[in-house]
Length: 173
Image 1 (cartoon, rainbow, N blue to C red):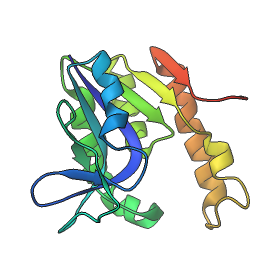
Image 2 (image 1 turned 120 degrees about the vertical axis):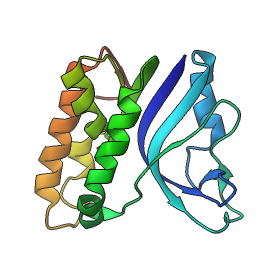
Image 3 (image 1 turned 90 degrees about the vertical axis):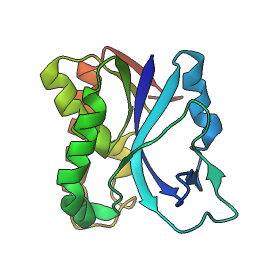
């Protein structure tokens, strides 16, 4: 069985199709899903680049194949990419015969959650952050910060309320 893993991270893809990251989501991160599933399909923002930087790590590999969502930075680019992001999320969430994990908070996962909830397809959630803290005064200096804070919190609450299973990554909350 395959699993789609929706996450809020930006990746780069080189012309040979390889997917790269400069963050914590290198190939080794996704192999933990292969203990249970035959294939892990991360669904995340992917930007096309000409070459990988020497400091980047491969994110794809045997059993891990990406399903790219539109690449955007910030709320204005997100609004422009929203129709394409929604289609990508919907397509990945609706694929029959595979499990879905939403690593929350996540924009692309929130789009998928709407479709999953409406269709009654079960999904699980991995809560890895607190959107209330992430958008707190002083943490973000954007004029729409307060609106985003409430919106992201409600989206995460909705994901958790409808998930068939939820894992929380926290030491205190």
